[in-house]
Length: 62
Image (cartoon, rainbow, N blue to C red; front, side):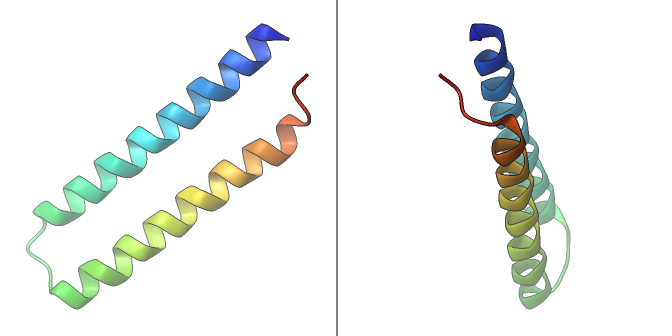
């Protein structure tokens, strides 16, 4: 079961890094502040839902 736990941790880490990268690239765009804020919230919500989906489908880890 150690491999399964390690795979889950790697998945969480990669998801976190992708979210941070998207948020960084979003800050670099010349877009209105209100639009950036809305897109930032949407990206964070999608990331949280993605993580929750994978945590729920992983099942209990002994």
